[in-house]
Length: 441
Image (cartoon, rainbow, N blue to C red):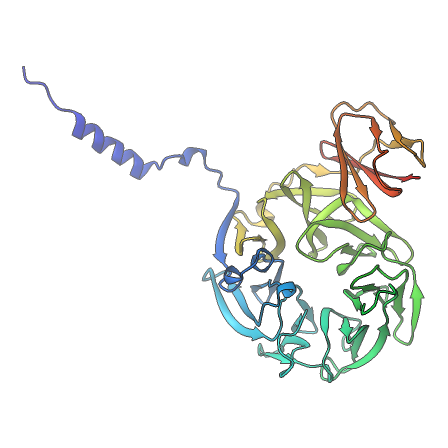
């Protein structure tokens, strides 16, 4: 009897299965972040910093991204808007700056402060899209050196913060940005030859504008400057250490909420109530913003994990999807979460924000407390827990926010090799955190 050759039949059957049932389809997770575009100009930047989408800003149904490397004198910076309907980046303007790290929407106009103007032969203190959708570069009237932030105090009074020559400077406009005047300067205090001061941010709380200068080669200045609409006064510091910087304050839950440092790396999330500043729930974040009565944060949870969380009160935090390990910025547009990455990609979560499960896990501050003994310490510190803890991670941070020691499941640490000063112990147990301060003398 002749044997049939079943090989062609089996091959056709396998091919049919591959076409109709793609390999791995059963195991794919439909709810995840997917690439929706690559920024055309950021992807051509020559440095690692330049390629990062450090800011995402939703405006008029589109998303604008901040990028560039002003440390390497890149620029001018093409401004592209991402259109969700066509999934395309469309060029709108080229700004006379070496980088854009910040966008602010003020009174129906979109501002991009020029972090470092590219050419002094043309306007370039800031770039603005007016209410008609027209972009242009502008001057304050005299060339600035750097402009970092913009904020409004009411419907017509606008402020911008930065530096001119060697002085930290605040400019004010009382006619909705038509003209500007210099209303505050602050000089460097470091004593270092050639040093200069900058205002990196401005925030409005309870009708008052808060700024705080930092020297380029030296420390943060010890006091904030507070403007009540009439005059300036010294105010409390917005930071616990002089090694801070400050970035993009947002008024939320009766406080100013802001990051400690500029974009590019994670930093402590801080809040200020008009009197005192505090570290919000021991969190380190890459980005944060206010949207629909929530504060959203892209959280650095350590070991490459990037969590997205939101809160209504800065105490209880709701966990949203985990982002990719190269995430650097976060935005919400038309009920979708977007993430900007270190390699110029724009990602979008496949499920709308309102369609995510309501019964999600929550992130609470730790209820167990930690006592450090002795405090101040000399060489050995002992950790005493108020409740039994078996599996935990310890991180020891210096006042500059640098990790100097890590340990697991240890309650006795040798710190004799560390320099004298103030330190923070951060205890992590699952999704619970606790932070305690101690002095090494």
